[in-house]
Length: 275
Ligand code: ATR
Image (cartoon, rainbow, N blue to C red; front, top):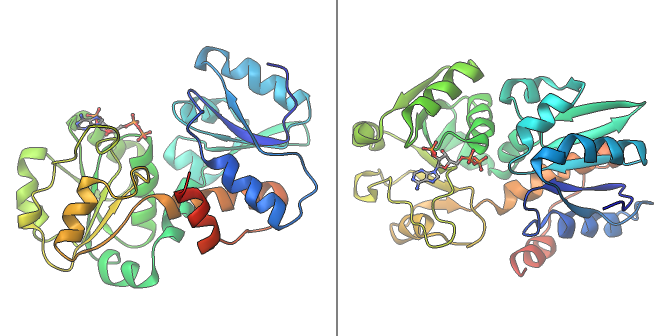
């Protein structure tokens, strides 16, 4: 593939990505003088070669998605503090012959939350993160930035311990079988695992044990209402899916490249939810 690209998303696979819809909506809305934002599918083995080619051909920036975020980190020559902390890069920028790496997932998660949720459910409160993959790293950083007391629970205990060590953030690791000991005191529960996609179901949390003030967040946005979120809804708990985070992380990347922080809107949410 030798297409020229100004901005786009690179991943493997990338066909499902809704980032082009979001970025192209803003390119039109803010009348940015640039090409359409594109999808680039690349085998991880060819990642460096392809990104170098794009850099040389005048690409301005790339979003990086699964499973290339760690590769993008090692490929970038200079990283922001937040990228260094998470060890993952979701935004590459090519400027003055150099490759810069940033991670906008952290700020994207923070901005996706309502002020009331932060004040009532996160700051100085116990926050439970389910999962210990790349997405969990960004969420743990964000919750810590917001003053949350972070608990991490993952199927594979070693990975939760590794996050704790790598991030250097004050947090506790909870074994799955001991979850009931902390669940009742938790004010915020966030699912960062892939459970809930396709036919899988997230049954990690026993909702009969959660308190009535807890806020439940699922990073998954397709389906819009996972069974995990349905369980929260049935109990009249506050809840949200990953759509706002997706849009907010995109907004921050857009700002890095085009120097405009675009706004989320009901119109954009409706477009993306309708895909
Ligand atoms: P991402 O970058 O999107 O976070 P990832 O790094 O592959 O993706 O992480 C996937 C997360 O979902 C991990 O926490 C994984 O748990 P393990 O570390 O034990 O693999 C979790 N996950 C995936 N499938 C799971 C399952 N069937 N049961 C429990 N957890 C699961």
